[in-house]
Length: 316
Image 1 (tube, rainbow, N blue to C red):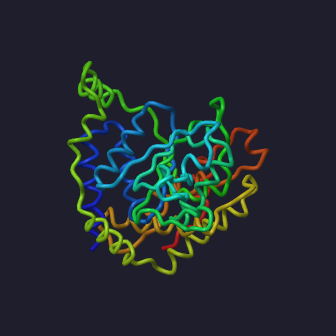
Image 2 (cartoon, rainbow, N blue to C red):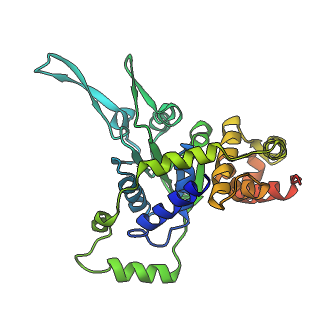
């Protein structure tokens, strides 16, 4: 059954590759998030095609795409929706905001204030929104892709720990290789040509493939030794002298779920420690809160994850 996971990855790679060039490494992260029903935080400088990637994903899934631009004056009602008075019905009716879509891109999420950031918490965790006295469900395959500027950028607000923990994965997107940028210039460098116009070439993937991939991930064998290894990694983060906050239980679950999908990507029926190591940088780095001393010393979260993976004994 694990071939279903590879089939989904191959189909997404094919369809997204019709439009997106140079950030194909993000496809595996999207596959993991889709199968495990998680969300993805994309960190990098502006202008690398992250919006185009989200639009291509929505079109490949045959779902609705909405974009939210993070600004300092963005309010929770701007993304959730608002009740307005309907003259004809002589009463208030709810007008849903952009959060009610299959694929939601929150661009520059750390430019919004903490109050607006917190409006996403319920939606990302429970896939529902509470408005007045009503609870409104979100689409079944609801997924949030959020972009984040580096902290050194002016006018950014650090995301709270509760918000970061709701992102299953964080991927860092850098500048594409020279060959990829040359291909971008060749394909989209014309006066009338545009990357967003190429979205029409993206075909919709059969949702049955996604359902089969999820079933394959759920049936992936996880040994007791492997579960203990994941627990050991979590314990190592919680007792690390340079960490003020270690891995949460939600993060622990995300690590094992992501490792299940990675095992399927290599056509295996069981999860190995190498699968855990492969996804650990995506799952752990953004969840670790450094001590003030470590921050002043310039320690990076990715370095700590590498050290944890090196020092934690691997089961045979």
